[in-house]
Image (tube, rainbow, N blue to C red; front, side):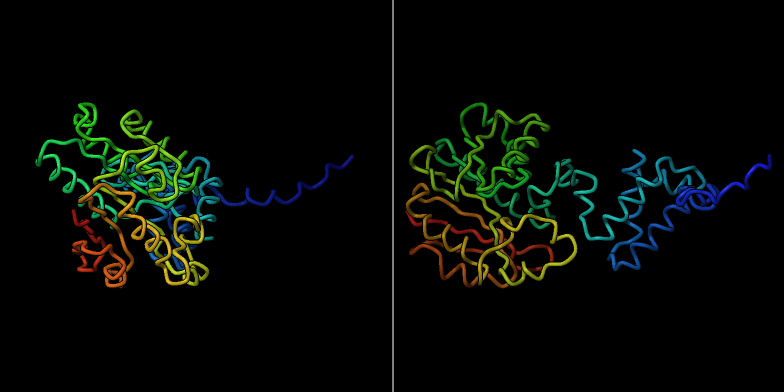
Length: 310
């Protein structure tokens, strides 16, 4: 009996380990795929995802290009998802933001660097009020999303929250986003310091919840047709957190219209805006309110501060 000839190797097992499976070669192949797909940062994406996959840091990858890559097929699947536009933060499951590790997935927007400006404005506003007449400060973050800002505020004011000097509320219209925010608050050990509520803007204020002295909000401000045309990472983020209606101002308009009834006298509203929206928001501000702008590092009008008249 003559033994049959062995068949061809199964697909996916034909690449010699020394050609493809070494760290350096795996990185080079992934970078080429991402560059061909139009990624603005192909090498960085490839390194960050491989470091995540291996549980190493990027410096280790660069120092060990000839090391084998365990589970290379799983890494290549991650690269395939990135080629399709899925955000790196969703692929890793977290975003490093202000030295915090914020859990991220499709339930909420990924925290952006520009939102750090909103956070800094909120910290300064709360600090200023605490230095005033000594009255407790109610601070409310509307549209908390992943809870990144709420986590940072809770960490910044933890002793004063525990002492009753600050009450911190965070709300969202999306129950999925609230669940993610709760996970992030728990992960950072501040779950008991923040009151999470399901609410449309400031709807419960003055009823189930005290009227806030400081309101912080990164509301949907992208025009609907821009959301329809979104590409890359934006295609994977929740529409409810992006779509501001035909002119991008529908949710902002509702917030400003309800502010006099829902906020405390002399309350301050801090809003993150899209580029070119400041004048429209200035025109929508409640009568007698003072409106000032906080530009970002690029000089763009990114955060607006609206102080209500007493």
